[in-house]
Image (cartoon, rainbow, N blue to C red):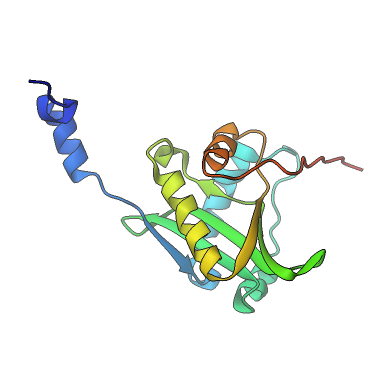
Length: 169
């Protein structure tokens, strides 16, 4: 009789039994601000394209946008530790003024927690919540340094629609 590895490998079986799942939520940015500030350097170290231009975040802008409802701040936590975030601007699209769109250029999940299915569950959480908010289109800027994110999104129905180009002046 065939058995799965979890029955034959007691270490694996124990790890699977004790595996915790992250908690996904919509939070007020002000409540997670200090934790977010602590993660931004790791995000930039991994994904920053302009290496000589570290982030200088205008937190007041983001806090105001969140307080006004124009920025929805999604979080992923494991044992209450912030391990990922996904802020989305949610507004009527000026080119399609009867439709609400959501845009994000800053998605991040701590690399220690990737390839465990957490990213996909996080994405499904924000997709579901944005749909409930009446969002018609979700647009995500994907850093070319993270092809896995692009593949994950494509697997769930996202399509490539634009290619962002940067030029320093």
